[in-house]
Image (tube, rainbow, N blue to C red; front, side, top):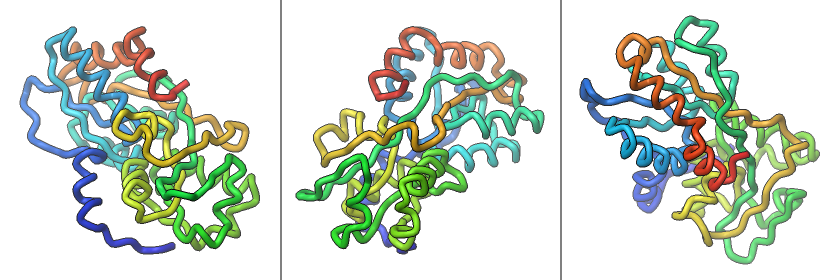
Length: 255
């Protein structure tokens, strides 16, 4: 695995792609959300706040990291995960107030911003000498990283490219690597490349779902949310499944 030092332009991009923590007032609803939903959830947040007059603070990171924080008592009211596993584990641990519910299914894409690099869904370009670094999310904490590894293995590419893999903490960081050119190519969430800020930058192809387990993304109300902000937590949770929200999810490539 290659170790990468961020350039100044990556730090500049981090304000766009990474969630920032800030003080939460008593009337705010605190949401923990997987990095891949950032752009879609920002739109959903605006519609929800306009309809309800409630204010939301959203913290973005890898689902694994957020799940650990919730287990350790972090004051998040709702958890919007990148898979079902983390919310279900929280439920088993008694850290949730309801049963996790799938709000969307994510899609994996192969993406490059390097000009002249032709990519296809078969992924053969990854073993080429033209590609020295391949960005993927950390499979230990990010469901999209697990899906990327699964695809590489099923396509018979993993052994050939393992030494080229560069692991981002989350899909957001993986996207930074690709966007800034720190890696020639990478595997990320379709929702990231569908965002207005990313459209027209580089080229991407969708990975066939048959090569990885469906990324069933689920949300859940935490025990903290039920205790501290029950009405607001339920309103936001329910809104994730509303026709307005579902239209936004679909516009970012979620199924």
